[in-house]
Image (cartoon, rainbow, N blue to C red; front, side, top):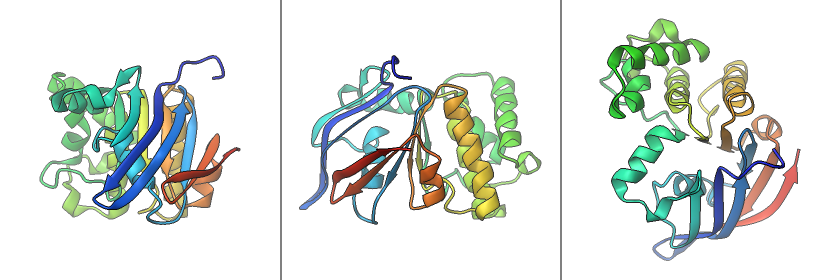
Length: 227
């Protein structure tokens, strides 16, 4: 990875919620296949960092690039397409469409990008198998546990073969065994498929699986450690 170009780059990113400053000039880079864990106490800016990297939030200052594209310079529809094609996002609690079967939830980014339905469903079923819930493909999220919906959210994030995967507490709804299984899927997607993986976590085991740990405190990088 040492000779690879960064696929995700944040340069002096700042963000404030009214009078509360969440990020105070954060800079980091991820290369293809690299896994980085962001840790720190609640309220330190971890989720804000992830949402800025995804183009969900627009930073007050600094730049964010995904595959060389300046995210802040894109129109909203262009950002949405970037999230559908190059950025896989796993938010807390899954955030699936409640009245769609899991197979359609997972296939949704492909369908929105114009893929044929049969092809999209085939890819979705493949990922549902990899995260261990293929038997629930026809179920809707309200019929399933939080852990099952989180597995589906991971499948949805990976179905497009993204360059960058952003995960906010990806194992938070799972027991230790289920969490390890899902973490293995994410790590495989990064290390063997060449996606950069940025994970926000409170879980020391999740953090220890990364190549680097970045600890935030009060919106600043407190320290960075190679693992």
